[in-house]
Image 1 (cartoon, rainbow, N blue to C red):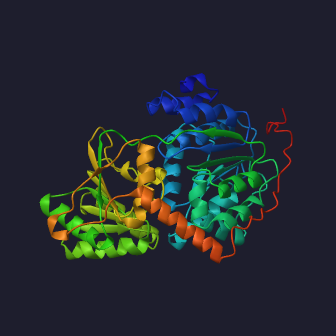
Image 2: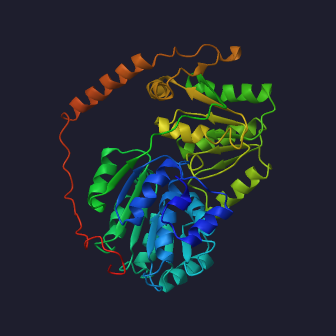
Image 3: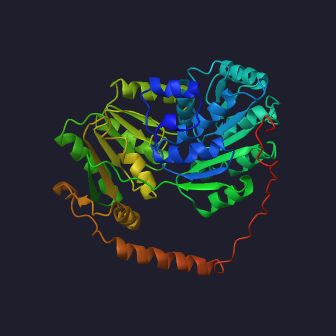
Length: 428
C-alpha cells in the first residue's frame, strides 16, 4: 500500500514525499487505518519494521486535523531508554515538518538543570506530543508539572524492554492519571505473559497486529566460537592481531561485563569506548560522537545500542555472550551490513549458552558456522545444544521441587476501562 492511499492528511503526505517515503511497511499498512479509526492496538514487531511511523503518522495526522486542545498534552509516548526517546523525537521532527500547529518535547534523564526547566515549561504549557522515559516523566509528575486529564493517545514503545528494566509500576502509576477513554497503543517485540497481563490492564478490545521477526540480512557473514569463558578474551586478541579491525561493536548483556571487556581491550592497546546505563546522557552523547567520528575503533556496549542507534559503517559485531532470544540476536547483528555494505557477526558460545544459541539456529533455519579456536587457546567444549537443554530442564525441575513445586500465579485484578463509545474528539 502507498501512503497516499491511506487517510493521512496532506501535510503528513507532503513530509513523507520530501523524505522519499512512498510504500507502507507491513506494520504501517495494518496499524495506520486502525489508529485512524480510534482502536486500541497491540503490535508485535521488531525494531526496523517501521513501527515508529506506524503510530506517529496517524496520531500526528489526527492532531493536525484539529479538535484537540492547544493547551494540553494530547499524546504521551513512553520509551524505555533515552536513545529511543531521542530517535522518536527525531522522527517526529521529520514527519511534523509541515505541521505548524503541532508541538512536541522529549523528556529524559541525565541532563543538566537547564534542560529540566525547559521540559517543565513545555509540560505546563501543554506540548501536543510528549516523548518520555518513565523515570524522568514520573519525577515531573511528582513535582506537579504534568496534567494528563486531556490526553487522547497513550503509546508504549518497546513495552517488553520497559518491563525488563523494571518500569512496570511506573507505567501503571502514569496510566492511572490518564482519561478512561484514552486510545492506547502498545508495541512489543515479544508477547510473554507479563506483556499480555499489562495489555489486559491498559487496553480495551485491542486490535492485535503481529509482524514476524525477519531473518538477518544475507550479507552478514555469521559464525561462532564454541568456547569457555576464560577463552573469550584470547579470541578477541587473536581477531585483532590477525586483522586491522575497525568499526567494531562488542555486545554483552551486562554492564559489569562491558566495563571489564573495555579494561582488557585497553590493555591490548585497542582504541575503544564503552556504552552502558551507568553513563550520564552527556557521556553517552560523547561516546557516540567519538565512535561515529572514527576517533574510537571499537564500541563495547550493552543492548542499549542494539536498538535505536543508526550507524551505517559497522564492519563487525561480536556477541561476547549469546543474546537471550532470536529477536535480540537479530537486533545486535543488524548493526552491521547496513547501507549496501557487507558485514561480519561473530558469537561466543559457552556451555551455558548452547541451548539459547541452538534456539537461535532454529529460528535462522540453518546451522551457524563454528570457527576453530586459535591453537594457543587449547580445546573448547563440544557444541551440543540438545544435551545442554535437557541438563537445564533437569536443573530447573530440581529447583522447582526445592521451592515446593510450581504454584499457579495469582493474577492481578484487571482494571478494564469503559470507553465513551470510541467517539471522535469532536463528538461526531
